[in-house]
Every structure is written in structure tokens, then in C-alpha cells.
Image 1 (cartoon, helix red, strand yellow):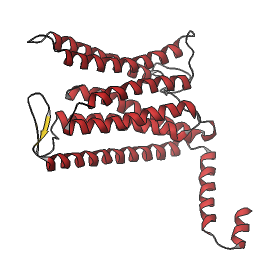
Image 2 (tube, helix red, strand yellow; image 1 turned 180 degrees about the vertical axis):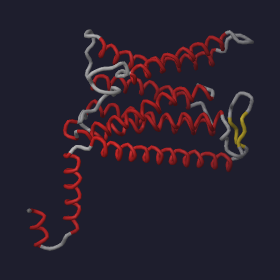
Image 3 (cartoon, one colour; image 1 turned 135 degrees about the vertical axis):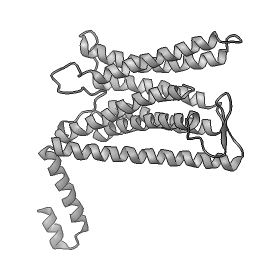
Image 4 (tube, helix red, strand yellow; image 1 turned 90 degrees about the vertical axis):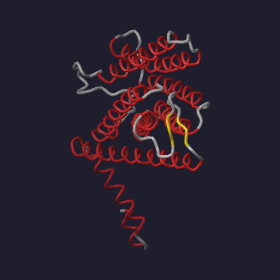
Length: 294
């Protein structure tokens, strides 16, 4: 993953899976709020079937497998490069491949559960399997970012924060199977993780390197002084805040479209009840209290 493409590919997978999860969660809640359940994955199209129904699982399993093969291939090439094998570089590739293996196993388990009768797994169990995959990613980037100093380490620490929140959200999805906020938060955090992979690639390996910092021949980032380092870190914070704002706008857009297309009468009743409760809190006097009680 120590390259632009190495960050862009997993970023694309997280972004696509997260954006689909956000839309699916919002659409299911808008269609029937009382029947909402957290899902470890979301089918494409109607529940009756179709060739695209399991598209999300194919994308997760296939994308993770492809990225894993690229990492293993990179490790083999590194070990056969000029000057002999570099154990440190080879092990980094193997670490990344091991983390991707966990996401491949999640997709494969979900596919086996759907297409066969030999491994029936509930959404709660699959959510825990997804949490295990995110945990492996958390451990990888936590220990991988420990030796990184400067701007590289700061970007990886922010990534570790997002991955840790993904672990918490997926575990809560198994413990709170009827919680719409938990399911929505999981999708939003996956979107943010994918976007941050892209931002990291653009900054550390692309054209968005901050002023005052330079990239050496080994793609390590060095800032000329402490002021340049602090400016680059503040810029990273601003970039993350901007991505959070974009995710927020996407959620609002999905909710507006889902409410217009699939709006359940119960959703309108819940909104009117909430508005009435807010209005009652602002009223003063015995007559107002009696009116609200009625």
C-alpha cells in the first residue's frame, strides 16, 4: 500500500461499499421505520433475486482478493529485486495481504451463507466477522504507523481513528440489531475511510504535498522545519473536516431522495410527533400544558 495505487484501490472499495450501505440503510428506514434491521450487507435490487442481488459481496470478496494478490506479487518482486531480499519490505507486503485476507473471508462467508445451506449465518454473526476484519486493519495500521514520523505518521494516525470507529460501529450493529443510527454510522465511516485513503494517496504520493515539505527518492516525506510540519498537520485536519462535510451532505441527499420515493406514513407521523413535542416545550402556562396533554 506504500504507493498511490496501493491506497486508491482499497479506497475505492471502501467508498463504494460505504456509499451503498448508507443509501440502503436510509432507503430501508424510510420504507418502513418500525421494521428496520441492521444488515451486514445489502442486496442490489428486489429481494426476489436477480444476477445483481449479491453484487456487494462479489465486489468486497473480489476486490479484496485482487488487492491481496497485488500485495503478494509486490512482496515476491521485492524479495527478488536487485541487491537481494529486503525482509522488512517483504513483511510489509505480507502484512497488508493478511489484512485483505480478512475482508475476503468476510465476503466469502457471506456468499456461502447466501448461496448454500451448509453455513447459515445471521446478520449479527456477519457483523462480528466484519468487525474482525476491521480489527485486523486497525492493528495493522496502528503498528504500521508507529515507526512513521512526521506527516506520514499523522495521516496514518487519522486513518487509525477512522478504522477504530468502524470497529465500534460494526460491533454495535451486532449488539443493537434494530438501530438505524448504528447502521448509518457504519456506512458513513466506511465512506470516510475510503475518502481518506484517496486523500492520503493524493498528499503523500500525489500532487497535493503541502508547501514546505518534500518527498525523497524513497517516497518519505520531510518538512523543512517545525512550522511547516504544523502547517501540514493543520491542513490534514482541514481536509478531514471537509470530507466529513461531504459525507454529511451525501447522507442528507440520500435521506431526501429516500423519503420522497419510499416515504412510509409512519415516517411522517414520527416527524409530526417530534415537531409537536418541540413546540410544546416552548409553550408556557397551564392552558398550554393541558393542550399538549390532549
